[in-house]
Image 1 (tube, one colour):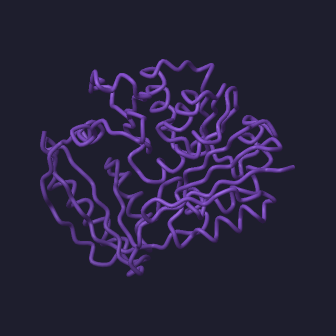
Image 2 (cartoon, rainbow, N blue to C red; image 1 turned 90 degrees about the vertical axis):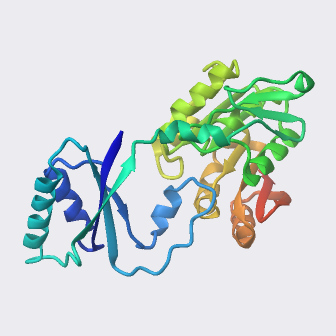
Image 3 (cartoon, rainbow, N blue to C red; image 1 turned 30 degrees about the horizontal axis):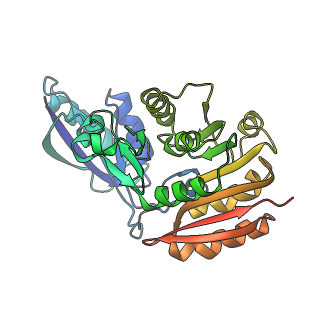
Amino acid sequence: MKWNQFRLKTTTEAEDIVSSMLADLGIEGVQIEDKIPLTQQDKEQMFVDILPDIPEDDGVAYLTFYLDPDLDAGTILAQVREEMEQMRAYVDVGDATIEESETEDVDWVNNWKQYFHQFYIDDILVIPSWEDVKAEDSDKLVIHIDPGTAFGTGMHETTQLCIRALRKYVKNGDLVLDVGCGSGILGMLALKFGAGHSIGTDLDPCALDATHENMEVNGIVKDQYEVMIGNIIDDKDVQDAVGYEKYDIVLANILADVLEPLTPVIVHQMKPGAVYITSGIIEDKETVVTEAVKAAGLEVLEVNHQGEWVSVVARKNA
């Protein structure tokens, strides 16, 4: 199915009120593009690998929306233009021009599958559910991963750094906490390495379904791996639900800007002797994380590199 796509040029000052106006006209799912810098709070909420370099804010915003071909686009666009002109009396709406184009209705959630195939991390075979394990891989430790809309296939250097450190330090029966669990790959591998129980937290509700689906194809039941949605950094309810001084290993494959405020909080979840495995750290942020780890009273055990990424492993001694 083809959709009519419209890209409205306005200002960052007006983007919120324009979005509200479009919603009032029955236009939903508006995509906003601007160059407004992220706040520190925004950065702490983003459990992703690395923030993109954003150009200097130029005050311009683009709002993209779609209309079903069966709708009278001419009438709707006339209403949008009329509303924009009325707004000029009290807000700078900029050019208020609308570019029109046509786009295909694409299944974005599933189309990526053609690019994701099985691969190895040392002797671990990471394989999607739509591929079969070959006879020559029968001796491999196999984990099935279909990330869907949640981060974490294992292909990224940061995830591989975490996996190798996890395998080195996990002991039979350990209780493991994965902050920013994404697809659940680290918590599930912890169980395959011998851990007794895993708990994952994430801000993205997609992580819940993604992890549960991956658990099912790996034969892992919910009694072995629990997932909670919420921000453990500042949400006391999440902190209480996760529990205190009980984890043998804490994993955090997230941004350095998140690790910095997370570390002094997460030490309270770790039991004495627990190991803290972090990654998602670009090289020039290594010192930021090691200093945060030390300031939280943890001992740095090792710092590992892969490509331009860094993993810092530490221990809580008391």
